[in-house]
Image (tube, rainbow, N blue to C red; front, side, top):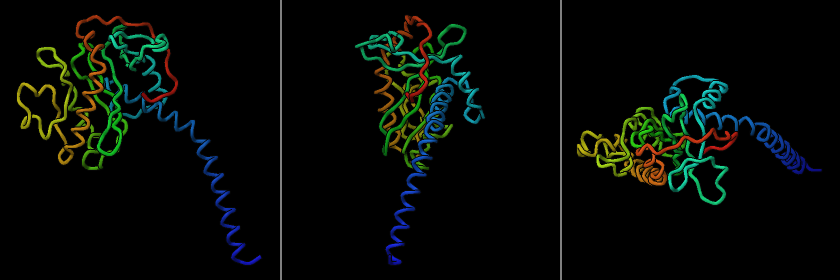
Length: 246
C-alpha cells in the first residue's frame, strides 16, 4: 500500500473516531444542557418579578425551590379566563405564569417571543395584578448586533420597563414602546408612561421590539382586562412542567 493510501486511510479513520467521540459527548451532555436551559428559564421568570437579583449567584436547587413555591404555569383563554392548560381540549390557550404570594396573585408573567433585526428576541414581561403596570422585563435570547441592538440584554435597558403602563389614562390598551432616544427629549408628556429609553444606533431593534411587545400583549389583553376589573379567579395549582422554554 502506498504512503498516500495509508495517509488517506488514517485521515478517514481519524474522522470516524472523532465523529463518534463528538456524537457520544453531545449525547451525554444533552441532559445537562436541557437542565441548564430549564434553570435559566425559571431564573428569568423569577427575575421578571424581582424574586432574584440579576447579579446574584444561586444554585440550581435554590432556583427550583423558589420557583416551585412562588410561580405556577397556567393557560389564558381567548376570553381571559385562567385555566389549567390540560383541561382545554379544543380552545387554544396562551401560557401565563402567575406569581402567587400568601395565596394571592401578585403579578402575571407572559413569555415574549418576537422577531428582531437578525433573529428572534425572547424573554418575559411581568405585569402587576392591576393589569396595567409593568413589574419587570427580562431578555433570555437574541441575535441583535453586539454594542448596538445587543444592548437590550443590559440591565439598564430592561429596568427601564419597570413601572411603565400598557394602558393610557382612559384605560385603553397602548402597549409599551421603545423611544428613538431618551424619553424625556423625544416623547410628549402624556405618552411618557408608555415609553422606555431607546438605544443609540439601534433604532430598528427598538422598532421590532416595540411592535413585537404590542402583538404579544394584545393577545393577552382579555386576561389583562379581567385583572383591571378585578374579575380574576385564582385557579388551583397547576401541574408543573418539567421541561420546555416558554
